[in-house]
Length: 461
Image (cartoon, rainbow, N blue to C red):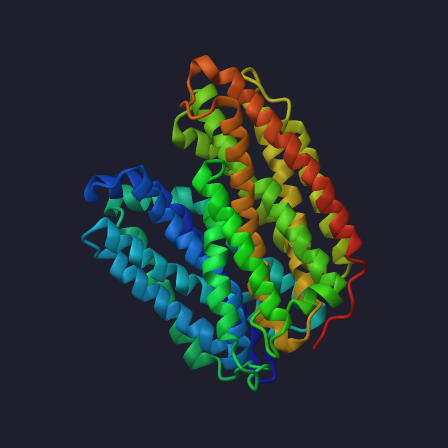
C-alpha cells in the first residue's frame, strides 16, 4: 500500500524489525554476562556497566536524536542509526577487553537511540490518522516480542555459538534495514528542516540526564544521592535554557500548552515506573524464596511480556476507533489490580497465582501502551514528530530507572546490604509487599493523569 508514493507497509515492517532487535540486544546480553566476565575478568561493577552503558546511551540521546531527525530527515537518521548499530555490534563482537566492549556497547546505544527516536515518527508520517493506531500497535508488539524471546533465543545462541553471536544478529538486521530503507523508500520527512539545532541545550541535557539516571538507579548510597541531586540541578538549568531558545532541542512549551501531550507522557512515565521493577523483584522471589532455577523463573516471568505482545496490537487497532484516553486508563487500571494482587505474596503463594497476576499486568500494560503512544503522536504537529517519538522513549527509559530506584531503595531499607538468605526471607517478602504497595499507589496517580489529558484531538496531518 502506498501513501504519497511511499510503501507504508515496508516502512512499518522495517520499523517493526528494528523495534524487535533493540530491546532484544538489551535483554539478551544480560544472559551472557557470566561468560563475558569469565573471558574478560570483569567484576560485578564491570558487568553492570556492560548493561548500563547501552541503556544510558540509548536513553539520554533519544530526545536530541528525535529533534535532529525532524531537522535533517527521519529516514536519514533511521538509516544511519542502523549503520551505527551494525558497526557497534561488529566491534563489540571482536572486542578483546572488557573496557573495549563497554565502549562499543555505548556505540550500540547511540545507534539504538537513532532508530528508536525515529521509528514511531516514521510510522506516524506514513500512515493516515484512522489507521495509525493499528500500525503503532504492531510496532509496540514487535518490541514486546523482542523482550519475550530474548531469554529464549539469546540463551540458545550463547549455548550453541558463544556470547559473540548475540552481536552478529544486529549486524545482519542493521545492514538489511539500512539497505532496504535507502533503496526502497525515496521520500524524506523533515518538517523542521529550516530550524537550527540546539547544541547548547543538548550539551547540558545529555550529561545531566546521564548523571540523574545513573544516580537514581544506585540509590540510596551517598554518592548516588549526590549524583541524583546534581542531575536534577542540571536538568533544571536545561529547562531554563530551552525556555529561552528560539528552536529548542526539547520544546518545553509542548508540556505547557499541550495538555494531551503533557498528561499522556506523565501517564507513560508513571506506568513504566510502576511495572518495570516488578519482574526484578519477582525474579529474586522465585529464585531465592521458591528455589527455582533461572530458567524456570524466566519461563514464569515471560508470561507478562507475552500477554503484552498479544494485547498491544489489538489495543492499537481499537484506539483508531475508540478514545485512546479511555483505553489507556483502563489498561493502567488493570495494571493496578495486578499490583494489588501481588502485595499479598508470601513463601506459600502458588505459582499459578503468580502467572495469573503477571497475565493481568501484561494485559494492562498492553492495553495502555499502544493507545497512549497513539495519543502522544497524534497530539503534535508534524514538525515535532521526532521530538514526540524521542519523548516516548525517554519516558520509558526514565520510568524504568525510577522503578528500579524505588525497588532498590525499599529492598535496602528492609535488609540493608546483606545478601538475600533464609534468615531474612521474611524481611525480603515484606520488602516485596511494600514495593507493590508503592507501585499501586503510584498507579492511582497514573490513572488520574491518563484521564486528566482529556479527549484525544483529531490527528494532525
